[in-house]
Image (cartoon, rainbow, N blue to C red):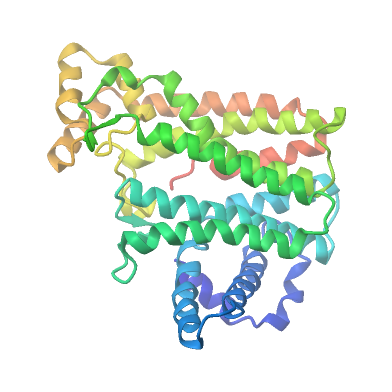
Length: 382
């Protein structure tokens, strides 16, 4: 949990940070030490706000000293660590202290972006738990009203941190544009996801199974997941290392990264859909709600390709209903259609496709980044 992670950080004072800087993408302790420095700077920004009384500032500090560690760390940190791995791969050597710290700071901004999205997404999906704890908006002293604003503040903190550390970096504008573009792409995907079943007159319209197609699903996944969960980290490493997307070499590298990340991202999201339905909540760290929320998931799209008319009636009667018995019937139908077994076949096919694509990437050392990503998600359980 976030509490355990922060307890570790608290036991390693700031003057010890230099002991962690010359580390690698596999060292989560070093990565977490950089997190604490970023958090400390952001809290200091609140302390330095003009025209606020000391008591109001203290209220803000007390609140966000809880909000940030509750919402930002605590996950697998794959997105952030991928930035460090990318810089290592592109430099083809051990990173200097400054390079490691810069890459880790960029990595944490991807984690901050994730936090912003998840706080908002949990409200939109009426989720209960996240990473094994109540969703941020479910905390009694937070509620939806604060959590919506907190999501916006978490997003703004990205740009405060980028300005603080990279304003004079030659790729500063490119880095900013990557975050701006990725945020927009993800929000487009979120809209497609939220409106799998549209709204009418302030409530969900009647269930329309014709909207649940693999074509719509793939478009949703590309925008909602692939760009921010996979491509952004790779592109940030390229940008930090000075690769210009307008040159022939740079354009090829960014295109290779995008191509493989779209496949990895789709595979990751399909895994997520299967885990949402079948993984135990205590393992997954959250209670899946895709069925209740009438999401255009891979499972329902595949089910509609396979169902008989009688089975389709079961879906029509139970999909999108916040009813435990209805959810159970949908999951029983998924099992009857052997969708878990179908996914296992798909997973092996995707693994082979990814391996083949990665093997063709030039330069060869750049392949290591995507091997790193594939290893992180292949056969994952949460």
